[in-house]
Length: 293
Ligand code: CP
Image (cartoon, rainbow, N blue to C red; front, side, top):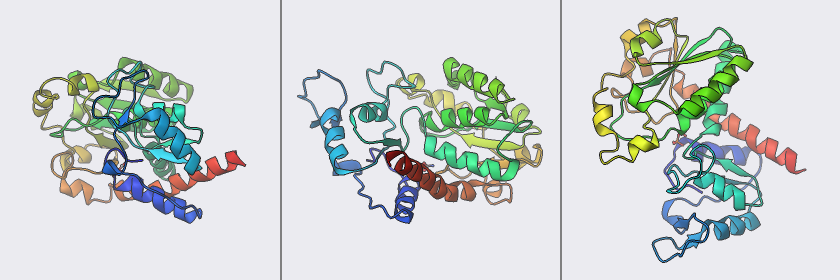
């Protein structure tokens, strides 16, 4: 169920399901009714169907349901755990795979972890991993950076989050990442200087994001982001790394987020990350299938 567009997640999940002999039905955009999410709501607005009905109906048709929905809930009890995908999962009687919620993108993080494992091993102890905020004209969700941060911390990397202070990830998420990193031999810190962060880095993972509180302001954080237009991954910045790899989940805006020559260089892992999405999805679906037996 895709409430937002997708190229990689949708296609790679369809390919993965096909490899395992499963059939896939995709409901995207206007294919399904607009859902209401709140319990006890009087549905006299735009929403034609409640998540309670939709989740239960689809649970009767399918063995596994995947859902993508970026938008945070208007009345969320917790931005990290109470999202549309989580509410759908709460009413589904089948496993629900998070294909990117307002808070997390675990399928992307699993694929990225596999790519990192190929180059550095499954333990990233001593690996300097930079999650670099980059300029983007639009307010993008925090799902990928939040999942990336937790993934790198859990693999034991020395993680630096480079981000303008106004766009920092939540203290709670940073604290959670710090605990995970300590448990696995790594560290987590935040800095507000991109050049300082990338110097000597082994991995530069670029991503733009705008926290939902900033995205909800009248200009959606545009003025803050525009002040940081030079937060872009350039050849010169990659030259200052320790033979650093460049990572990005894609889609990426060329010469806005990252320069052409970085994307085209041998340091870029973006195509391997995208290809790994298929294998990661095969692992997820096979794991769910095993659990069901
Ligand atoms: N990286 C990623 O999830 O890509 P899509 O948004 O195209 O699925």
